[in-house]
Image (cartoon, rainbow, N blue to C red; front, top):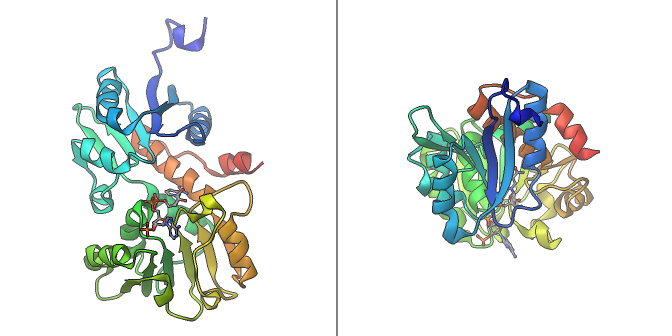
Length: 284
Ligand code: NDP
């Protein structure tokens, strides 16, 4: 008899990750490690759901007692529409990566990407207050991290994107979060201000094609951290290239992935899992 069939053991709470495709997702491994380490009676599965079936499948999951879901590409905006209620950070992001069924049955949508990035930058001892930040890319990930990042009061943020108007729209939408203390600007890659930047965040999907965006080498200096939101076991095309251009430090987004999962775990279970051992296991 399996543990879940035992009469003395209540059925495990059900969680999962929904995306399309989803076979590559590391989330089931990460959450299984968190659950084992913190003694939570839960299961976490992956669900491959096509966009046209998204709302129906999610309704069924929650109607059958499912407790929470992580949401990944291409469903993050659809998840924001699906949720009955959004947290402030999810509303600002316009995208949801964590859904939770509350005790009153309401489905709440949250976005933990920004918190995940900040936690990883803290691990990397990279303060944001007063820093100059360059963000490459203006897609869903950038929209998700902007408000938490601006709340740390950097001195300047420049958002560069292939479609400059998409970056400019973000700068417009987040002007209130930047306030008077932060110079928030946007433009094309050609308009990136010359000179070393404290933090360069790579948030385009170009890494999937093995490419890097056309960024002037002058943005990288000995004190720069070049951080790729994309991830792999070792270097990504961006971290390799940034190091070659003279970036003093480089990091890739595996740490952010684990930290955003830990934030979701905390939202669901009220327990903060240790992330160090999971990071070591994934890197091994
Ligand atoms: P989106 O699809 O929303 O945005 C893609 C971005 O890449 C846009 O800025 C787009 O520019 C740009 N882009 C795509 N193709 C090209 C190209 N040929 N040349 C130049 N720019 C291009 O993706 P996301 O924002 O959701 O994700 C971005 C990255 O962040 C991905 O690698 C993803 O894996 C990673 N990520 C990592 C997380 C983590 O936990 N580590 C969490 C979330 C995301 P344009 O607007 O001009 O089309």
